[in-house]
Image (cartoon, rainbow, N blue to C red):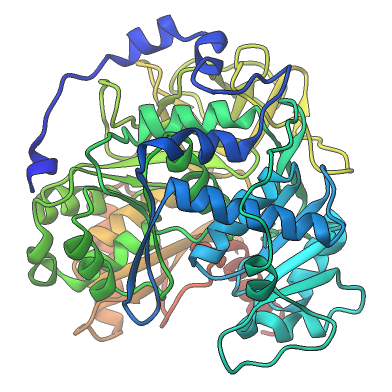
Length: 555
């Protein structure tokens, strides 16, 4: 409570943009992007002398452990020695198929210490998803645990495997016993220096509309990751920080591990799955003041109601949201029921976060807006001819490459990148630029609905639906219509205590019509038990469109 009550003046957004320079950003690092840098030094070693906490870890059974930067430095050295003993060289890829445990953080840091490249594998992936990613990266070694080991047995050409074994568990003879090997290693390993263009992460796109593409992340991306933690998250020394996103995905790996450790700040990992009760328990138990995560989790907190939330009301200082647009009703609920500002942030695996409602910079905050370009980036809205559009004209969000010194993405791994051309990176997201320079989200280019000549963004309709107390979640798509080209159809997950009736469907349609417009309301509503989502929580509207197309083809 004391931490949450601390206040201070914050710089204005305009001042931050005016004073930004890439040399100043690079000066935040200990290493030099041209002469030599190592991510483990930046995220661990240089903070080890102060005996500061690096990791607060809670396992699936609720047991708590704390690790200092000095302890993580020693663990990372043991990991690096073990990797080298397995033939890993600088530039090689080491994949991690691990839950949110201290071993995961040690593997990441040790990989970097050895000058190698870390590749995350989400533990909910099946063998096919894992195999594709390993083939793409050419990983030299996979570090996993016994709970996930069987998935690798189904992969024909799998890399060498090191497995974290619990007492009493047995491993295949070909596996390296990760813990035993670490115990035998020296706690000293001189970090391998690289340059800013060398890779330290190998990511993958979500693959929602095709096979995942490799996203190589160079060491100079550390500049952008640090800027996000300072300006958007506003991470302060007195904060207790928890990013609930899984490090198997970009937001978790970039900003639950890399970002806070880069600033010398402790991070929090919880091995168990997400529940409303466990989330509130950990916030209360550890005194979390800065929370980050996805709108999916926040909608579930809202759905549980204010009575459950009352125990932590006023304890949080700031909440950050990323992954998909944050519904205005969720923003209002957090302000009212948790007494905390929740700000929407926008980014991609390919970019990190680039457009934010910054907690650490003073600017106008409008519900439904993605915010302003982070200092170090220049964004533009392009028409189909790649010309920049004036405010209040819908088009595609793009990053001006020449005007964005923090931009680190230069193309997908060993394949063409049509999104980069003419001096821009095109995000594939439709937005409008507001007169004040902020960005309002409309939807993915393939999600926008065309009805009776109107272009309708699903986000606005979904946000209007979720305002209704009967609606827990909603997803909106366009379905073919002979008169209107498309009509708006909503898939609705009801809140507890409400029944799926024609009368409720009509009530929801009229609610949106009143709240939004006479043309952008759902003319069809289907009640469903759940919505299809990616493992990171993004709604997969393309699956709903395919389901609807299959229905129509069978009638």
